[in-house]
Length: 173
Ligand code: S3P
Image (cartoon, rainbow, N blue to C red; front, top):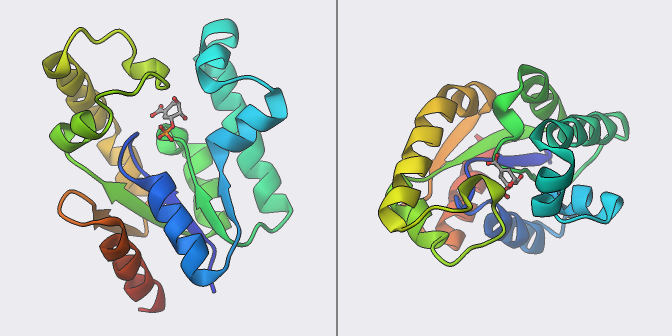
């Protein structure tokens, strides 16, 4: 079984789909944000605030290099900005088969409406502004997500178990 790597914007469903895949396949699940928080003892928000985004991005790259070196096997759920660096895109693809969970700005804004843990969306004054910011970031990131992906799963119209089913079908293709 290939290692399954999930990429995509915040709120696209990576963590929920990763957990469901882990349960179904009896594989271990790693979440890059959770690993970075555990090893630094800081939340992502505090790391952005106190050390800056570039520092966080360096932690992401180091973690991917380690996972590659140790031959990680299982399900890897990644932070939404992970594929932005070309180096990371190559690392992701060397770790496993990469699935881009794609969602529209409207559904992401809805899923993240009460969320306060994403520093890049903090401070939006209402849903309309949040959705505009998401749409702008998504169009700036689309090429990077697509370049990193082996497969694209549209999560707007599917629940978690449908996404899992589609990933498993594409894995055996
Ligand atoms: C980020 C997404 C977050 C987290 C950080 C930055 C991004 O992860 O890594 O806040 O740049 O899109 P999730 O996609 O798990 O929310």
